[in-house]
Image (cartoon, rainbow, N blue to C red; front, top):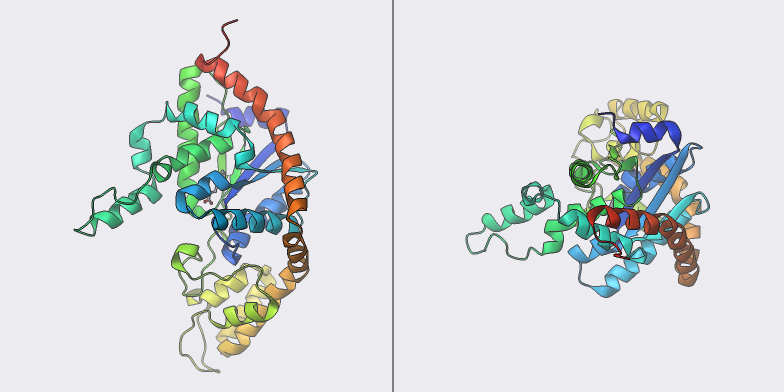
Length: 346
Ligand code: TRP
C-alpha cells in the first residue's frame, strides 16, 4: 500500500510538526537537537509547520505547577526569540487544544498494551526499580509515563504531520505513532497520516559537560540563555583530559569538539580538528567554542529577555496560534469521532 504521506506530498505542502516538553529551562542540547532544525525547516517554502508547547507531557515528569508554568514561558520565549515566524508557523500550547486529549482516548482504546510495555522510558523506569531489591517494579511510575507515547501520537496525528523532527531518543515514539495510526486506520478506515521522524544525524545528540548526552536528567546541561559571563564559565567546565598545551589531542574523543562541531560549518570544523592535532591548549579551544556559541546566540538572547518581561504578549501569540490549530483539529476530530461511532444520533 502506498503510504498516505506520499500521496499527500504530491497534493499538498509537507507538514512538519514538533513539540517541546515544558519541564525545564531550555539548554544547548534542546537548541541543537530540536529548536534550531525546526525553525530552519519552518522557513522552507514548501513546508507548513506546527510547533507547540507540550505542557500535558510536562505533568508526567513534574507536579510542580510553578516549574511547569515558568518552563512554558521560557520555551515559548525561546522559540520566539530564535526567530520563529508565527505567521507561517502554527505555534500553540498543547493544552489549548481540547481535541488532543480526546484523540488520546480514541487512540488509547486501540493501542496494544504490549506495544507500550516496550517504550524505552517506561522500561528504564521499571528496570531501575527491579535493580533495587527493596522496590516494587511499578514504584513511582504513573500512568502518564506509561501512556506517554499515546499522547505524543495524538499530538502528531491530530494535525496529519508528515515529518516530525525529534532527538534520537524520541525515534521510538514516532515508530509507535505509526503503529498506532496504522491500527486505527485498519479498524476505522484511512483517516490518519503515518508520520516520519526527522533526526539530524550529525547534530541530533549534543554531549553535555561530562561528555554524556546533554540532558536535564544527567545534570550536565549548558542553559541556552545564560548571560555571557555565565555561558563562558559553563563552557570552561566542559570535561577534558589532562593533555598539556602542545600535546596533540583527539577531536573524536572530545565533548568540546563535538559541541563546537554543532555550531560551525565543515571548514571551521576541519580547522579546529587541525588545531587539536597541533596541540591547542584546552583553555584556548574552550574560548573559541565560547566565542562561536555566544556569537550565534547574542542577538536572540536580547529578544529572549524582552519576551520574558512581557508574558502577556507571549500569551496573545499562543492564543492566536490555538485558534489556527483548532480550525484544523475541531473538524478533523469530528470526522474521527464519527468514524468510531462517537457521534450525534440526530
Ligand atoms: N516527547 C517529546 C520530547 O520529550 C516532546 C513531544 C511531545 C513531541 N509531543 C510531541 C515531539 C510530538 C514531537 C511531536 O522531546
